[in-house]
Length: 86
Image (cartoon, rainbow, N blue to C red; front, side, top):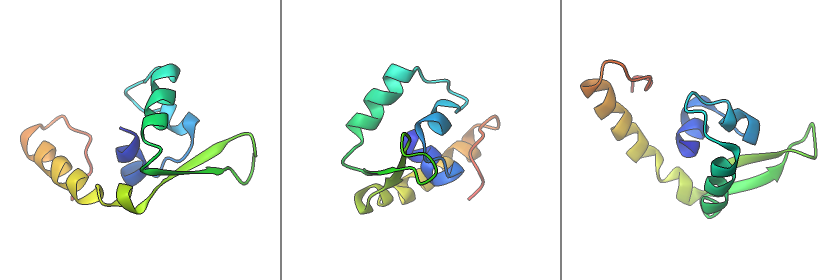
């Protein structure tokens, strides 16, 4: 969900991820961000140093073609998907 939100919806902060339709609990989101640290770059938010922003590393960017394939499969097989067309 986090990688998807970065790629498709340009979300970058904890609060933006938290506002996703899935309504992930804060402790689960924190845990997932920690687990993804090898694929994410964590930076201080320019406008508010108390916030962090997250971006994909090169390794994380390598996941984009896989996400696109999954979204395409989902769009073809589930009419209720919110996946953007590719």
